[in-house]
Length: 190
Image 1 (cartoon, helix red, strand yellow):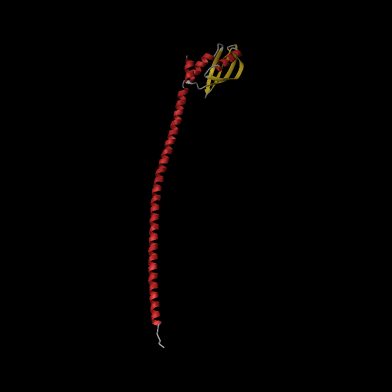
Image 2 (tube, helix red, strand yellow):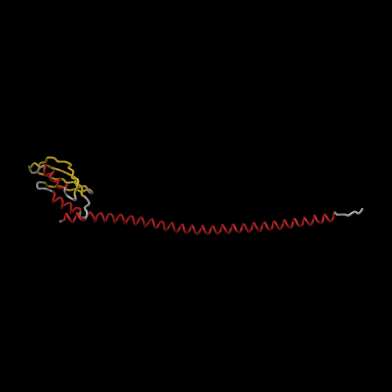
């Protein structure tokens, strides 16, 4: 029988397989490290790109915030100007009101009625005076009620008074003045 020693051949194959295993393992480790480095580089570049976009957004947001503040200031100025305009328009509209009031009082006050005070608080006007009789006070109230500029005459009080040894009725009444249109004003002037 022939004896063949196969041990060195097997051992040599084992060594070669071990060397291949270590080489392949080393290549896999290097390849894994390269892939990890590539993935890390991609992630870092994506994060940097997102940071750059976020910085752009932050600067734009700051710009928009300053513009919003400017717009808010402009709106406040516009509101203040509109309030001023409304006050001026109100004054412009009401400037002839006292003329109309005096004109209507001149037309409405009958003989025997004397006014001692006229007081205006907003649209409410308080008249105080003397009349020869209570019927003259009611005649005054009817005349005031027919006026296009005056409305809702209301008697506050009528009491008997003595002035220069004459017996008179002292009265006070409230009336409201209306916001007359331009057509009413021109008709009243005629």
